[in-house]
Structures are given as structure tokens and as C-alpha cells.
Length: 292
Image 1 (cartoon, rainbow, N blue to C red):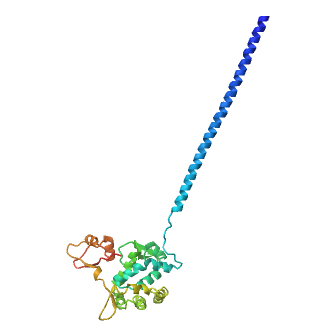
Image 2: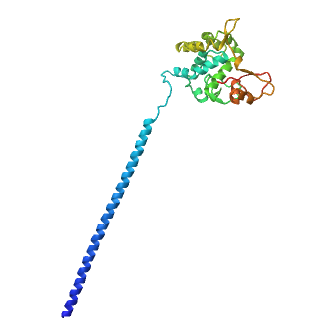
């Protein structure tokens, strides 16, 4: 009996020791888990802080970029679209006056009127500032409702070619020859002469041109050109354009490529200057070789 009691006491002691060991292990494990969670939380907190710092650096960098960005110079601001048109194209109109003897005031007034100061539908889609129709034109074309439905108009890659074609259109057609006998400063004579020669059908066309010239003082641009770009005709006293410095006479062996290269032009520019439809040249042919 005594031995049985001893065995029971030993087993009880072993059980109590085992329970105590299990509890200590559970407490240690729980503490370890808490420590690991705390470490993970600290790591995530550090990573979040680093991310925020990087974002702040990027934001500051963007702010610095914005701060040093230079303003874009867009030129003068005009409330009147006609004044903007004059500002944009006066230099081209004056150059055409030097080359072909057409008053810059007339060219600008026609451009404003025909293109609605560059805002007209035809002008926006074709760079055609003077309403010149195809009439055998070999270049690109645009179709637009005018006197008739979907009429054919000339299309240009750049507005400057429209101004050049306008000069050639007037200079090379006999019906406008009388205009070039007028005094270069007689913008009223030019305005009425254009209507008389059939440039426009509107009976008020001359009055509209004259009104634009006088309202915006466009004749000042004629006066700026006169004096050094024109020579006095001793017989009639009228001013005539001097083209001698910008003409080239084709010689044997000349090619469009060679002439263009000699005068710092592209073949396309040389053909446009002279309204050429092919690369064929004739000995003695005179070509304009001054670029826009």
C-alpha cells in the first residue's frame, strides 16, 4: 500500500513539472511573437517613412522645375485680328513689293479681305490668302464653295507661297498690265484698277481695299520700301521695280539643281519662284533666283 502511494506521488510531481514547462514555453512563444510583430511594424513604419521622403523629394524637384521654367515668348497680343494679320505678313508683302512692284498696302489689304484676316475656312485648310482658283494649277488643290459649289482653289504648303503666287498672278497676266503703269504709291488707283481688270466681282471691292489701307495706315509700309529698292524712271517720273539683281539667264548646260544650289535655294523653291511645272529649261530663259 505504501509503495502505491509513493508511485502516485511521483506521477503527480512529474505531471505538475510538465504543466509548468508547457506554460513557460507558451509564454516564451507569445512574447517572441509579440517581438516579431513589433519588429515588422517598425520595419513597415521605416519603409513608409522612406517612401514619404522620396515622394517629398520628387514633389520638391517638380516645384524646382516649375520655378525655373522660362516663359514662352508668344509675341505681341492683338485684340484686332486685322492688326495681327498685318504684323504676321507685312515683311512678306514688302518683299513682294521690292521684287514685283505691287504696293505692300494693296497686298495686305487684299490678304485681309480675301482671307478674313487669315481666319477664313479656305485659308485655314489651304494657305490660300487671295482666293486664287486653280485655272490650270498643277500643284495641290482644295475645294470650297464660292460663286459655285465646291470650286477648285490652289493649295500651298506655306502662306509665303500664296503671296508669291499672288504677285506672279498679277505680274504675268496682260489684263493687269495697266496696274504696273500706275504710280507705286497710288493705292487708290490700284484698288480701282483691280476691280476694272476683273479681279473681283464685288462693286464695293475698291472701297473696301481703300478703307482697310486708310484705317490701318498700310501706306506707311509702301513708304518704308521706297527710296532704296526702286529706281526712278527718267521719262515718266514713275517708280518702277528694279528686278535686275534677282534675275538669272539660263545658259547652255544649266540645270535647275545647279541654279538652285548656286543661289541657296531648293529646286522646289526655284520652281515656285518662277511658277514652273517641269524641270525643263531653255537657253536664254530668265529666272527669278531671290528667295523669300
